[in-house]
Length: 404
Ligand SMILES: Cc1cc2nc3c(=O)[nH]c(=O)nc-3n(C[C@H](O)[C@H](O)[C@H](O)COP(=O)(O)OP(=O)(O)OC[C@H]3O[C@@H](n4cnc5c(N)ncnc54)[C@H](O)[C@@H]3O)c2cc1C
Ligand SMILES: *[C@@H]1O[C@H](CO)[C@@H](O)[C@H](O)[C@H]1NC(C)=O
Ligand SMILES: *[C@@H]1O[C@H](CO)[C@@H](O)[C@H](O)[C@H]1NC(C)=O
Image (cartoon, rainbow, N blue to C red; front, side, top):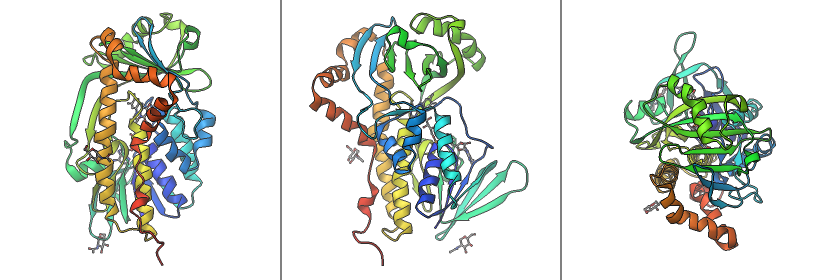
C-alpha cells in the first residue's frame, strides 16, 4: 500500500511516522520548505499523548517539555477562584504534556527522516486531486518548476485549517460551523509567574480581558494567550501588547520586565467538515475540524484522529478489514468532534470569557466538581477518565483472526 499524506504539520507527521513504522510506503507532501513554528498548540491531553507514545516519541517529548502541575481559575485581580490539583494526571504514563508545537514537530520530523519507507516532498503544494475505484492522483505545484503528479492508494488531507484537500472535496467555502466574535493573541514569553504564586496553568475569567498563562518548558518559557478586540489590525494588536501585559499579568510588568519571544493573533472557529472520508480520500486534524484553543482540545483531537486512521489503514493493508472501516472512521470521529471537542471547548471559552466572573465563580458546576475532586479520589478518577472521551479504538472492527 502507498499512502499520500498532505501537510507536514503534527497530524501529517505523526500519521506518516506510524504508517512507515508499520511497513507502509508513505509520501508526505508539504507546501512550505520547513515546519510552521508559530506559537499555536502547546498542551496535549492524555488521549493525544497516548498516540505520541504509540509512535515511540513520548520519551523525547517529555525530555524537552514538561508535565504541568496544578491548574486554576482566577479573577482579573489575580485572586484565586478554584484550583484543580494534578489536572495533568501526572502519575500516569499518558499525563498531559506541554511542549511548543514547533518543538513537537521537530521531534516528529527527526523520527520520520529515519524511516526508509517515508519520503518527504518539501515546497510542493497540493493543487488538485483525482480519484477512481483503484487509486488517487494528486497534482502538485512545486515552488520552482512545472506540475508533478503522485499516485497512491489513499490520500489523507492533514493540510490544516485551509486544507486544499477538503476544498477539493467540498468546495472552497464549505467548512460548516461558526467563527467567534473574538481575537486571541498567542504569545511566548519569559516571565517569572512562579514568583507571584501562580500555578503551572492559570485561566483568568473576564468578559474582555480573559487570558490563559501556562508554563511551557523547563527554562521558564510561558504561553500567555489573551483576548483582544477583534476589530484591531495586526499592527494595532502588536502596539497594544505591552499595555495588555501591564494590565493582565501579576506584578503589572513593563516591557523591560519580560522577554517576549513571539506574538501572533488568531481568529477562532468551531468547524467540522461534512465528511472525513470520500472514496480513497480522508481528512484528519485541522483539515477536518477546528475548535478554540481553551482546553487544549484542537491538536489533541487531531492526534487521536490520526491514531484511529492509522489503525484503519493498517487493518486494510494487512487484510484485517475491508475499506468500509473508513466509513466508521468518518462517522465516529465526526461524532467525537460534535459530542466532545466542540461541546467542551465551547463551554471552556464561554467560561473564561464570561460576562459576570463573580457569578461564574459562585455558580459554575465545574468549579464545584474541581473542589470535590481535590478531596475525593473517586471523583478525581472519574474526571480523569473524561480525558479519554476523544479516543476510539478502531481495531475492534478488525476480523477476529489474522488473514491467511
Ligand atoms: C493560539 C492557539 C493555541 C492552540 N493551543 C492548543 C493546545 O494547547 N493544544 C492543542 O491540542 N491544540 C491547540 N491549538 C490547535 C493546534 O495548534 C492545531 O490543532 C494544530 O496545529 C493542527 O495541526 P495539523 O497538523 O492538523 O495542521 P497544521 O499544523 O496547520 O499543519 C498543516 C500543514 O499543511 C501544510 N499545507 C497547507 N496547505 C497545503 C497544500 N495545499 N499542500 C501541501 N501542504 C499544505 C501547511 O504548510 C502545514 O505545514 C491551538 C491553536 C491556536 C491557534
Ligand atoms: C484510475 O486512475 C489511474 C491514474 O489515472 C489509472 O492508471 C487507472 O487505470 C485508473 N483505474 C480505473 C479502474 O479506471
Ligand atoms: C454522540 O452522541 C450521540 C447522541 O447522543 C450518540 O448517539 C452517539 O453514540 C455519540 N457518539 C460517540 C462516538 O460518542
